[in-house]
Structures are given as structure tokens and as C-alpha cells.
Image 1 (tube, helix red, strand yellow):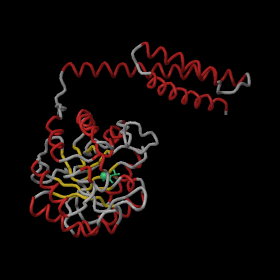
Image 2: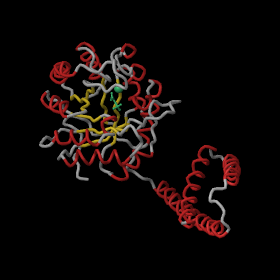
Image 3: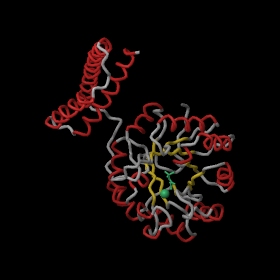
Length: 352
Ligand code: PEP
Ligand code: MN
């Protein structure tokens, strides 16, 4: 995909690109105080939600246009770039008319191709940088589709934001990271910068630092982190916002590992992994062939494909073995279930 850098003039091209600011622009004072402290922390791009998508009505839905003069002050008095979320054509027009520097498309919007197309059409003829959050559901193609729609409108400075995926399982994370999805996005569009949003993944401030480090270890290009001059009193997403001072601490403690220098020994180890993956594939193919033979047998003897008891025994036995070999039972269960699914699919082809 033909893309241009999202690094704006005056911004350090080193990893990570940092965007920070409150979930929502609440008051002029909150915007200016937070931005001043962030500037001191070295942040160059200020984020603030002006229109807030809320799960239920009645929450703070943002001030809309009333907040733009506050953002203008951040630009003019502090020399920072400002970024806001847009969800429809009206938002795009107002943001452009108010000299916003960067737009982002929220997770709920990315999930809806109609909305993304409407935004793309409104962007035609402009060249503002646009960051596209992943859709709330874990669907890499829906994410790529949104990126393509924006790209087709002529926008070239595009970035992706990984903010995790909605799930009923809220044990640790507010939104599950499913790291393999942004990794797959990177595999498909290698030159697209990816920014991690630890605030919406974690949902709690204690999780911000570890998620930032994980994102850096996975070679993400940047971080977008919610910060607020008085997080506990925030009008939205209070539990996940941090002060600009804490942000400084987190950024200072990040370990950024060099990525473009592959050492000799690393190359050798990677080759070993390639080889082992080959072996794994061959073994899997062999297992599928045996499974097909079983399918033929079942067909000839009029037996059902699914033999629940046998499947259950296999699961228990292999999970116990995996645990003895130092792997997690959960992991082995996932692998076996995926293998079983493919095995059943192949037997069904034979039965037809
Ligand atoms: C936000 O950035 O404040 C926001 C609403 O995020 P998301 O679209 O990821 O939920
Ligand atoms: Mn938020």
C-alpha cells in the first residue's frame, strides 16, 4: 500500500511516537492544564475526545464544537499538534474547519463500513493524517477494509491503532489484546505504522506500563495513552487515565530494544524455528491423512463422524502430556481443538 510517514514536522522519528491527552475534553481549564503538563513531559501530540461514543445514553457525550477553541489554545499557546476522534461527516467537517492536525476513527466506527465510507468521502481532497482504530470485534479484514476505504479517498498518512477487542471475558483486560491480530495486520501491510492504546486495552491504570512494554517488544511504532490532570475526577474512563507525571515515569522506564540489527545467533535461531515449523506442518498433514482414512472407514461402516468420548479422552490425555512437557494446558486445548476442527472438516468432505 502506498503510504507516507505520519511523523509530523518537529516530531522525533524514534520509537515510540507518543500521543497523549484526556479521554474527553471536559473544561477549558482541564484541557490547558493537562496539555501544559504533557508538553513538559515532552509530548508533542495532544489527544482529546470532543464527541464521545457512549455505551449507554446519559453519560458525558462530549462538548462538540464548544471544545475547539480550547484545542486551538493548545496549538497556539503550547505549539502542540491536536488529534480528535471523528465518527461521521459532520465531525470531519468541523474538525477540518478548526485546524485539527490528526483525526482518528474510533473502534465502534471502524466496525461499520457505511460510517467509514462516509468519513472517507468527506476526506476526499484533504491530506490530513488519519489513525484507524481496530474494530471492536476481532476481525482483521474489517480493520483492513476500513484502512483501504480511507486510502481510496486519497489519504496517504495513515496509521493503525490497536485498542483491543470487546469480549464478555473481562477478567484482566477491558478489551482483549489478541496480539496476533495487529501482528497479522503488520504482515499484510508491513509499511503501515501501528500504535498501541494501552488505556483502552487495560481499562485500569496499573496495566498501562506492562502493556506499553509489550507493545514495544512487539515492535509497535507508537503509543496513545490517556492522561488527565486529575484522573480520578475524569468525566469518562476515569479508571484508566494517568497523570502526565505518571506518563513520564512509564515512558522513562520503557526498554526499547533495537529491532533492525539481527545478530548472527538470532538468525540461526530463527532458521531453527523455520525448520521446526516445517516439521510441524508435515506432521499435521500426516495426521490429517490418517484422519481421512478414519473418515473412509466410518463411511463404509455407517458410523457418525463425531465420537465424543474418544475426543474427550484425546483432550485429557494430550493436555496432561503437554503439562508434563512444560506447556500450558489451555494452550494445548486450543491447539487440539483447532486440529480437531480441521480433522472433522476433512472427514465431512469424505462423507459427502
Ligand atoms: C477513545 O479513544 O477515547 C475511545 C472512545 O476509544 P475507542 O474507540 O477505542 O473505544
Ligand atoms: Mn477513552
